[in-house]
Image (cartoon, rainbow, N blue to C red; front, side):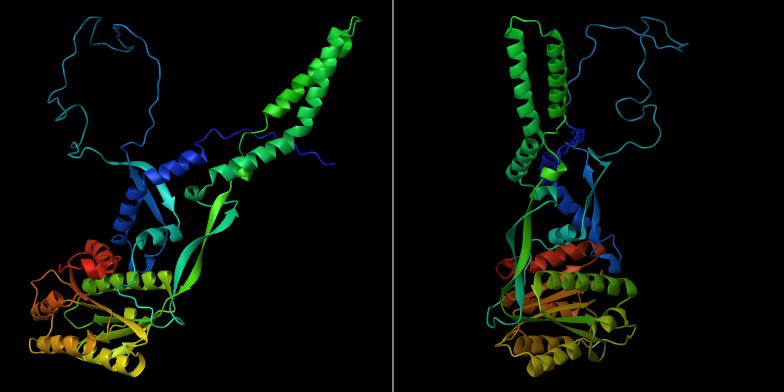
Length: 429
């Protein structure tokens, strides 16, 4: 028979249950930090984990402590300016305006402290794309596109605190303590019964009584050293994703690479498309993506060329719309495919070409697509292309136009375009 002796003490840190409560309490702050982090990352580092700073409000727990009562007067050692009973004047410019400190006072009622909470890559992406979906997705073919749904899949010994199952963990704690202490408790009862019998006997058993009392004390110490709960006892709810067949879908990505698109504007367009690509690949399976770059001429390219090619030229937006229409007719039957499109441009286009873009959109593309999103990235005044597209958005619910001026606008615009039930809530920016 093997005996296991567990002499480890309980941790003095915060319990896992308190950590779980903390995560629930600060979920909104974590989501806000995730949103803010998008604008601070490089284009190639969008999908890594994140360190989140928690605001100081409510971060400290209340503590009761005792102090000296009554009226007290004290002169600290080393004082050479004041005597007992002297009144000390306020610092010049009191009331928070001057004081003895250096630097300017903050005009904010709160700030950031040094507490940093780390979330993993998976947790980061889950928060990033929470409550997003492809609008108007129709289940017309149940053999290609697979949407994942989360389901319970038993328990595991490690995981995030939010998935901790307290009842199952306590059951494990009880089982471990029974296994480690049942033999000792049984022995303890036998020794206590023998001790009581010897003390009731009229004969002298002093030496044996002392031995029994020593053994009983040691057994009680050994039982007390077994911790109430241990990391071995923790059980976390396990969640897995299983495929849920829906339908076939294709996303067209149309990006303007003309000379008017400077490098900063192209970087913002790339950030938007990287977010779109991560959203599609994480939420759905087997979504096809078609990349189209255009200046005066449009060309279908692969992912590498779409994001990194340096080709440039003039601007004829209709060339990209024509190419998209040709590809749809050749490869994507609207009766079998859910067709989506996202177009990014700075809005610069030949004035005579913008009405042609509107005609192609209304006559050829919008009748077959589920959802079309146009993103204009510019700090200038809107030009003819925006005005033409705005007329379409006013009469077509599945056509959306949004304006991006800075990097900070990308993620909020992305969430607004692809939030659930967006077709019913869509408004023009």
